Image 1 (tube, helix red, strand yellow):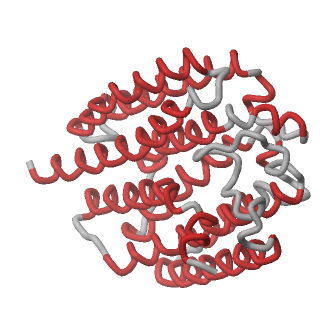
Image 2 (cartoon, rainbow, N blue to C red):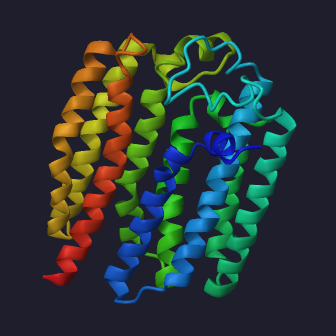
Length: 303
């Protein structure tokens, strides 16, 4: 089995969903403590990526099992699964086995970090993360098939990862880090949200009640715009109340990309391929705002 096929299955381009929050939590800890433990950083990153891979593979397997991806006539680069099962590139059972193996490996790393860190904070965060990742698509919960899928993704790739990465470095928790995790949590939830628009018909057909299915596309795009604006309001508020350094306001340099996502989604929310620039822009926003927040912390520390 080629590396290229497995790269497609694990959806490597979406790894930014993990890279951004783990790095943000780690940089915030460095900012607060003047200390950075590289070994723990790389272990946290690897463990989180393995859980992410397990989640992606489990999602592919169970979406295949429930017929969701099979009946989707319009898969896009951002939605409809990796398609490796549908194209018969990898057998479904191999996808499931790989998912379980990566969940186990990620959990082993998490247990080691928990041993190093103490107090079982990483254990608790890790258990929640694995639970959300596996049961996002698996029975009996199938979280992603109800109205809490977006919330679960925002929580898992937002607060859980940011707080976990912070604790691994700082060995402490604070109310501040929970607040700092909100923008990246909102942004990754928005990535999932906008990517659900192309899947509206197939999701509805198999009873997958995403927010787009529940609200309908017209009302869902209004919520998308509201949450997009809320992300910036949260960042500005965190700076005003001094939970973020003043220089983190450079995150506002991402506004042109947000405006593009707004305009494209407003005009094309009911189309599939015309909406794709909004999908790409939302993913780009998640990465760009994350990078700008890093830069804000580093620049504030230097100056």
